[in-house]
Image (cartoon, rainbow, N blue to C red):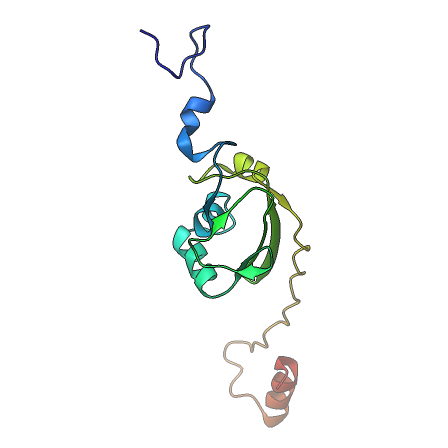
Length: 145
């Protein structure tokens, strides 16, 4: 007897492995679940915490973690020191791999800020003794004090 996930030629459908969590027919998903599913945050609890802290906006409104996200919504997320602006193109409820996650949204985020130049820390040679007053002032000037 053939299962319902097999196509007429007897091979299993590729969509069958995805389950109910991935699909175009799904109408909406929780904001925290969708953000986590498309890998914008590392954990679902971090996504929920970002929602509760007001760092997630859907169509310009701050949302709670259970807010419904639909296709076409603009999601703005402030996470890990970076602003992400994405437009939902596909609803997923289960975490998906990175190649599939990229297909679930259109990224309109500004480019990440450049890494700030970190001034070298003033170090002394081992056994050089206590710094003089002049050397201390020089170290303070280098450190921006």
